[in-house]
Length: 114
Image 1 (cartoon, helix red, strand yellow):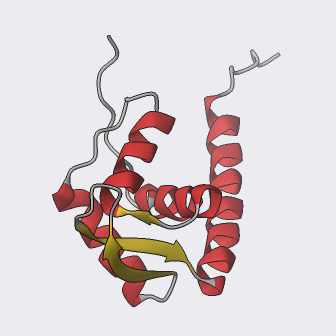
Image 2: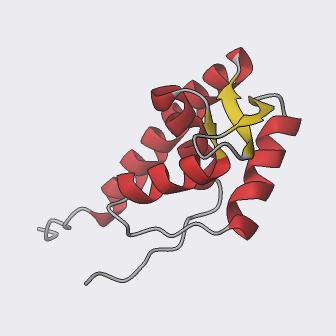
């Protein structure tokens, strides 16, 4: 079985925004489970990691939160992507692709000097 991976700084916000973009409004537990499923269970999120990130995204205006009953009829806060969040998701996605391309160039096999 593969080891669990640590979430690199800045990636959790991107994963949350993308999850809400794809699935629509979800409560925190649903966001965490979806991220874990998408990572093929290589990531495990706990409340101490997820909820501060959700709070920060909400304070920045990238997501909105609304209290309502969950599927278990418990009170849960559902988060949804805002228009500003969609723009942020596009910006962060572009930046991560650029970063990945840069790192890939450094990790590519070297050609022997002639």
